[in-house]
Length: 157
Image (cartoon, rainbow, N blue to C red):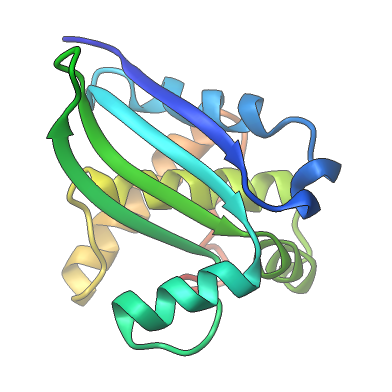
């Protein structure tokens, strides 16, 4: 199976204070090896951009922590572009602070969450949410991150 490859785009200068973005993405990509092959673009943006995309694509006029845009087309080399994962700096950091968890842990969770959406996972129904949350919890535990749902709250929209 071909590998899971990615690129990291810092769309907002707010992410300049997060020097380990590529490392964070690489940790999650390592968890996805063998589950998926293809290319993903991880775009680190801000609330304003994400709010605009959220309104345009989901009809919700507010920022959210992460958006995923599946693609599935192959590039000229034959590698499938699985899609884009876009994260909003202000929302990600605010949520981590509100939950009392390290920003890096919350960021890893959201990178994984967005990636799983590109692989076909969803949380539209309770059953789908349970499958996705269980997988997230299992994979994050492999890299030493506690269950993001342990409080019983669902922080993902």
